[in-house]
Amino acid sequence: MEHHFPAFDELPVVPGAPQGCLWGFYDRNSKKDELGSLNLLTPRVVKEAACEIQTGRRVQLDWPLDSFKSPGFGRRELQHTILDASENPDINAFVLDDEIHINTQGSSQWDSLKHFAHQKSQVFYGGLTYEQAKKTHTNGIHTWCQAGGITGRGILVDMVRYYRRRDGKLPDAWSTSPIGVNDIQAALAEQGTECRPGDILIMRTGYIKRYNESSEEERRKGMKFGGPAIGIASTEETVRWLYNKHFAALAGDTVSFEAWPPPAGTPFVIHEFALVWWGTPLGELWDLETLAELCEEHERWSFFLTSAPLHLKGGIGSPPGAIAIF
Image (cartoon, rainbow, N blue to C red; front, side, top):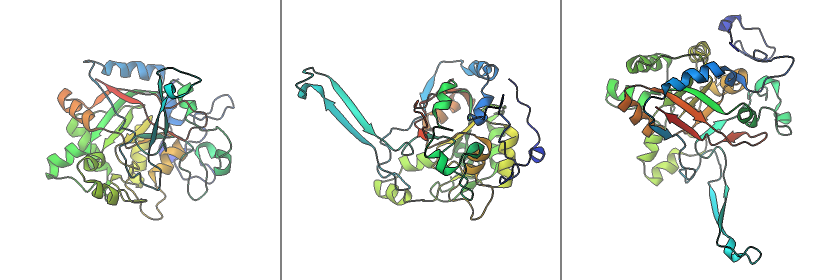
């Protein structure tokens, strides 16, 4: 099914929501939508995306689960336990299992449509309330799995490459360094990368690069609770640009996709527009370092992307299980 979007200013007004809300746009046959912009990954879009596979080179974009020794925002770090069946007399076999405890926000992740609410009204995509979200599976990641996962054309916007070539240095990735639309468009133009409806936009900001190059002490300081981070600017210009591009999903290598924290009082927080008003999945802390190298080697910044999140009913976050194929 093809989707024809109204202009941003012509979208119907939704009570309690800002201009630009897409609630109801994807509803069909009186059924309330829970996929949001993943509806754009139609069979035609996915089939065309498969044309990106030319060389067979591939890279997984998940950062190791144990990368963060001190996860930010007060989250617990990974716990990994190996279970030895030979020590169990009821089993009596040389078999190893393992158990893991993770916070799904502790490394590379997808945010589902019930992760970050509109902070003022405490609602999620489609009007799901905060209290309802705690008691139902609605808007959970399992809906993505049931739809076949996230598969389509990925495009990398390599801001590290762009800033290094333009300025000879990088913005501080561990400060609130907003990346504006003009810089994004300039980076895309320099790469020769075209945006298409249904693309999965991936931003390399240098956050993980900075982490990889830092000492443990520097990492602890940089990852303090709610610590600042580089990211896309939370502005009206950004919101309108993202809307007009009609991306299926957004992802990046930083902790919050947008520069964090956003300006106090702004109505254009990207987490709210993406997750709440549009139903657009957000990926964070993706490891894009090898991907950037492959893009440079291939001299193209588009690729086939496949992502298989954890199939958990009502899931709020998940490792992406993302692979880019050239």
